[in-house]
Length: 102
Image (tube, rainbow, N blue to C red; front, side, top):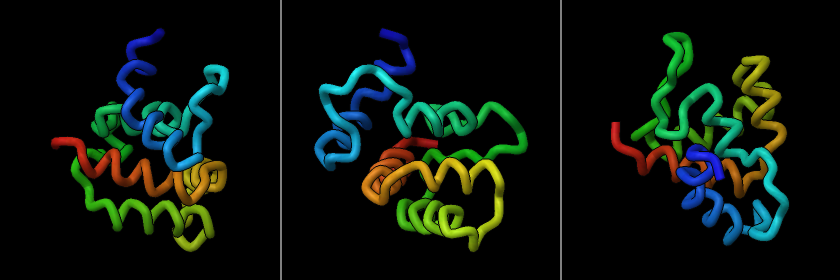
């Protein structure tokens, strides 16, 4: 198991409980892993033009994902990513990143 997947286990467990990610599914790229590609699994982005998500306000992040999803907040990549996750996943991701230290 990769280090990144092992670190994502708590989030995957939350998503499984919400029914957003099947606990017995074959390994696939989880929403957390997709976000981590740019924003980091620890919520600290590795690129200067990508915002850090660690310790951000949970409700703010959730609302931003909804805005990206609907197109109210324009951003090509984020609109694509936000449309591919469920509301439960968006909520779990927001809670996860909000819980991380800066």
